[in-house]
Image 1: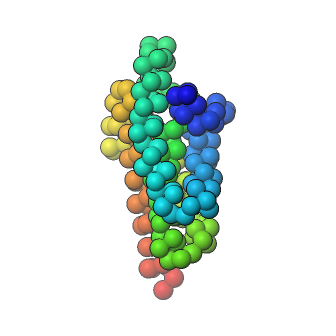
Image 2 (image 1 turned 60 degrees about the horizontal axis):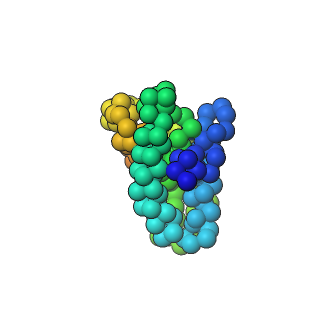
Image 3 (image 1 turned 90 degrees about the vertical axis):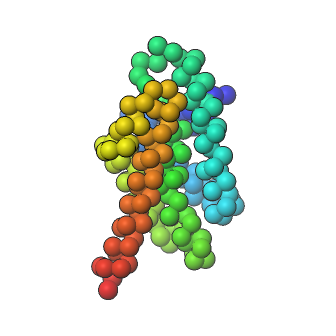
Length: 167
């Protein structure tokens, strides 16, 4: 069961770039969650995926041990899912609060995806620090921080566009 969770139902086995595939699957899943239950289902799923990810990553790291080959193997993508969902919070919550379909703000979805992938790959500052941690914390925390950076980037880009460029 933990293997299915960490690979996000097998998405982590897609090649090349399983993290990007995991992030892309997270975007589509986020929209499906919104479509099925609105902003609140998306937020409940986000909160729910965190302890599930900690449990599943912990089991897989403990089971794989030294043969894991790396402290953050590419096939574990539940961390990308959690981070990507954090990055998409502005794309889901803002339109929901305005009574809009989130796809009406599709640039926020694209920016959330691209910024999350940028921060997850580049790993500046605290993201890199978290990535160097060992165990479950190292696998998960860097993606959560990258998600926060990406969400802030989405908000900043929206502010720039609507507050400066559209004047």
